[in-house]
Length: 298
Length: 172
Image 1: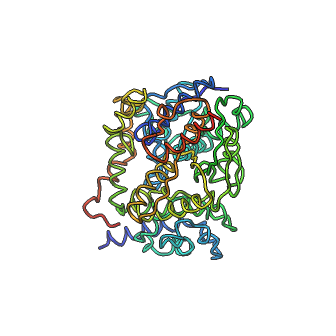
Image 2: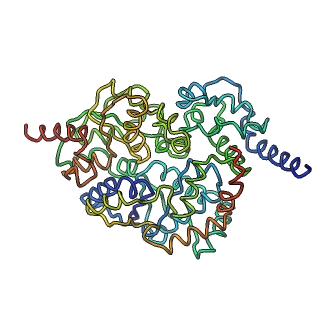
Image 3: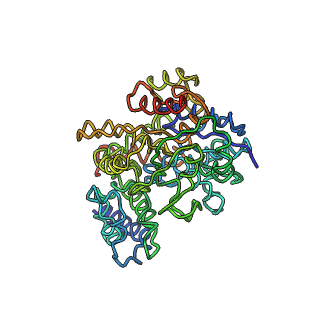
């Protein structure tokens, strides 16, 4: 199998570098062959850019894919939005020669050509399909005996006919990867519901997008968890910064720590919280770390 | 006047062709009952599917932009209508006729300028170095020739024109 290149996107390197660090540390510790992808741009994001002009969206996505093709590596994404764009674009290029020709005409102007000979992967489905929960658990140095609300996000699994990861009503693959780290994945109402951020709604109608987030957070809070784990920095932002924004707007306090899966995995592999972007200066995060530390002592 | 009529005709032709799939709709309402946005906003996706392609008023409907593209409606539609794909194509017709929300235009300008929808800032440069990463990520932020390529491609696709045009007469 081909090695991997790490596609960073925008939010991870520019807002949540801890997720970038967690990903790099985990992949290195697991001896997964993954290198940087120099010169990549925004995927571009599926919400706004795909809405406005499909050709621009496909062309920029194709340029990013070409960078990985030139290294003869499959592309690894750590964001549902990037996965949605790049997987969709890559499949379109592979399946539709007319579109491919059209996009290559644009790419030729910068001396590039897309071939359609690599795959785009998302770290969650990559771990699940290439490693599986059992093998993942063999790397664990620190069992995380905590209750986790798994948030799949929309674009990891939908549209299901394109993603091929099974049905979206009750998926289990992500939960299995969380359970592999010693945690309990708790069921909660509307678990597969959207975080509220996608489609350009957060950027243009933040208050309305936060209504959706508040509804989701309320159900998670009621269920009682130690943290939320996601697979997407945009969901991450909506569920995490969203808590502060909701507090300001509506006065509702949730105080639920939010981790990207690579951060949860990072903790399980023994990396300290600060190194992987979990800010223990924030009370809810400190409580989570205290809980985990108390398990180490016992 | 004739120009305006021709433009109207072109728009309604485009709307018609992107919405053909919606003709299979039987108005069962599964889409609306599956819509997370519809629970909290005025988005009525059943109604949008109903009028898609029939009336160009839809282009000025704010509800077009309340969809998070979660695909629930799309997945559950018993008639197999690709609802989100249709909605995105209607959005494209709206954008191409100058109906772009100011916040979305801003995000597009970021892409035009930096190659990123969300560019780096000083806080995050510091955050990066504090945890042992390089100050600038391995993206077009660090590789200026890469950024030039991205800009060239956006010009080639006419994206800069699309975003910078009609800015004063924002209709959305």
